[in-house]
Length: 69
Image (cartoon, rainbow, N blue to C red; front, side, top):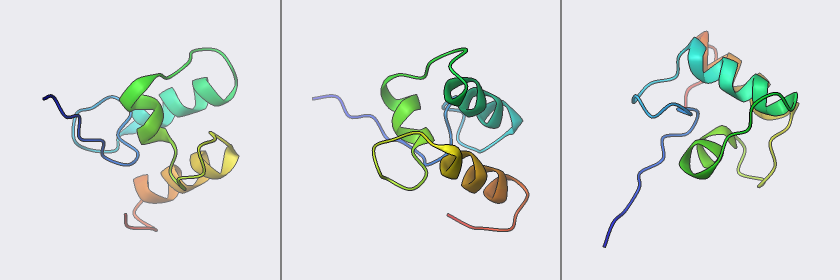
């Protein structure tokens, strides 16, 4: 069996939320580049199975240290 661990907000899989993760989520949200698989799951910051502006806002708050996950 193979398992994939998804860290909420970590769309690039490096173990932390960085400006790259914010950029990837924004590009997905505006329809320029699309996330798939574990990256898409990581981008769903509020677990509602949709990527919305709410996910982007929450990721920004986590990135600047205003919210912990």
